[in-house]
Length: 142
Image 1 (cartoon, one colour):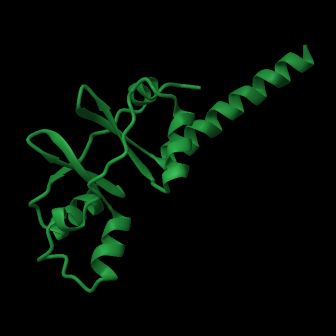
Image 2 (cartoon, one colour):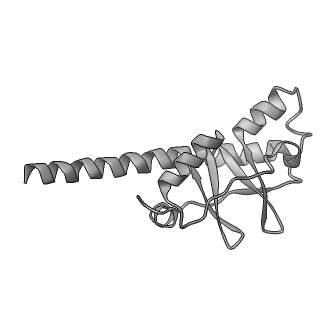
Image 3 (cartoon, one colour):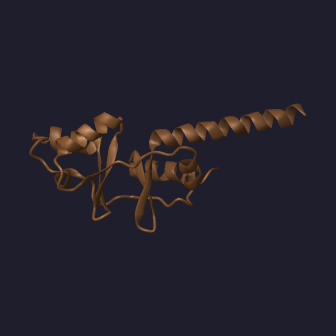
């Protein structure tokens, strides 16, 4: 199975960040504009949280708060689960499954260098399984 480092080298993506003091509506606009489900929350280039569509739905919409007046710091997830570039893709699947999360920031030397989503993980695992099946078919057929 591929490491996360190998995955992000093959699938480079920009890491989109907001500040804790930004308004929720501005963070949502960013997520809509770039078609992503979560953004990293940084302060002085340090990871301080993550804001996902799930955070918005549960902590703004369901609580009757206002997206324009609420700050990212009010609703972000502060205890962020992260992975290192040396971990394997299947490690991500287990972590995401165990913690019921859909996005994992990738951190190296205390700096966020990427983010991997459940969709990324599933696609990579399907790709790996297809390659294994093809190899087995070649082996069986001689």
